[in-house]
Amino acid sequence: MSGLNALKFIASKRQQDTSPAHARRQKLSAKLHEQIQMAKAVQSGSEFVPVKVRTVRDDATGEMRRVEIPKRLKPWWWSGDNGKLCITVRYGARTLDVVEGKNAIETDTIAGVITTLEVLRAAVDAGELDARIEAVSGLVKAAFGKEEGAVKKGKLKLPLKAASQAITA
Image: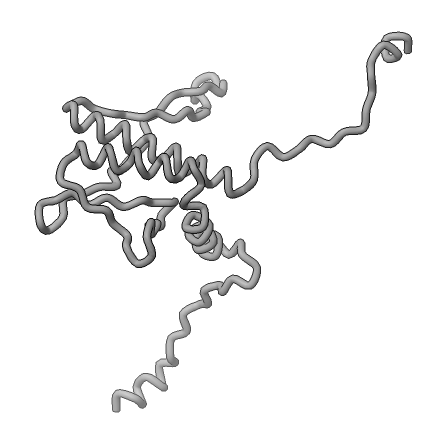
């Protein structure tokens, strides 16, 4: 017990590192960074292949090991009808409206895409898009049924065979 007497004991509670809004902001900022790196690779003519680490079990030995596998990454920009490049910002599977009612940003070149993505990343890091991210995050949560009062999709009810025949007759 003499070893414990040398230690200083206190009553403390670990503080939460980040708020949910900050975590969402960091998530979107990381995705924007990946898009910037992809656009720079397209501009220079090289290939950008981000990797993620997975734990897999070796069939022969049964041992778990970590391997790096390439991430599937789709560009957030495309060529529009007028030949210009259009960029959307995505949060999960949803498109984020940066400005109310506008879901895409138009640029002329891939250099404009890089500049636009960097401006968007700076805005996200500054917290300017927190309200938009929160709104899209709420839609994503509602789709998974995590929100209180979320409307769950019911089963499709088909009409009875006799009733459908009476309608067609």
